[in-house]
Length: 570
Image (cartoon, rainbow, N blue to C red; front, side):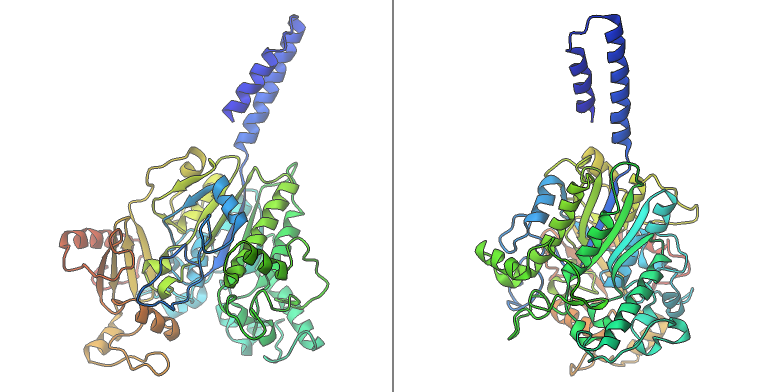
């Protein structure tokens, strides 16, 4: 911005105007242009925050599990996937190569993203009923936004922003979401039930019920601080409870993002915040190939949406699905990863619309994921679950081609956005993030964090750039059963475990424990620089490191009043 102001002064001074009157006019013009530039420089950014669902960054192979399936991360020019639009964001913005989430499973991670707070701070009724004050909190997919709880959209509304939502929720009405038997009850009046196998393409009653339910969820999300709500998936695709509709539809959600952007213009509009949660690549696996092709993704019928079956929607803003597969093959990439190129074209459509509306320069676009999945790290505190891709683009501020290698946590997203929006926080609202504004606006290259704190189920962790300490503790009722020699149920036909899984979801716990060799050990220490796969527990070899990290963990746990965690909170 300084260069532009200097150029204006120099240009006016070089006109060769000799009269006093002309000189005065020049001076007025300089003042006018200078003030205009200052206003532009001071403009609060629009923000588009985009989350994929279950995606790690670029992962190394796992030699002992050569057939281990894990969706690839964004390309950033890599040789596995074809993502030209996300690669463009990296060239024109900043890539943060050590981005992490605080709680690596869908609902609590999205809670943190939308509040800047650790999941255990949730005021949601389900979570606090399961774990009342005075008991150990076990955050996983039981966390939700509390009724009226301060949040990123609410605080941005108060700061003069227009707020919008598109895509996957999985963060409100957890009881209703997962129990269609409650639909139509007093707790969920207005939600309509329909047979699981019914096809909205051929059954008009089911189609209308799904259409009506979509409006119910949109109305419900508006109560959480969103002025504008578009296409909504209430949870995972499976939680539509309609088998034919259990397929991804990137065009349907992208179209809704573009619909919102079409309501925005550069002049005379309030700044905006848009949250876009895509369903890619969470199951059903979009890369899974059957006799009918990629039946869950690119070869699915695009008429199936979260609001029933529709054939009246224009998706011409993106290439056809068939052409995307051909594009990937022609570029020399494996077509099984074409689902990521599909999502990449969603990003491309959004970037184009920002250009067309004159909004690109002043819009911060963030693309990340809710958590990783590499090596079944989901619901663990291993880096396979904690680390996520993160790229940001903001032409007005971010230096193109920047890389930030230091620790970032998803608590930082809301903190950064609220900082840039100049929003005021309630005096009693504790946020856990660090603002990344100095990195984005000034190119700060020093680390802003010494460590990050993480939680899931029975486990807590502290991570530095080199070390990670994980501690697993059990509440008294579980500890007494362990001490008595009781075995705990495993998933499927697997034999019972000496200890319970970290989380209640036995399916996820089973896979995590199989692919992470130290899963059931109570105390764990890893040298992340020399053992990035976290195979070697060094807890007995570095007592001084363990003591330091335990002390750091104790400080973090002390910020959760009345939430015991073993000897750390006594």
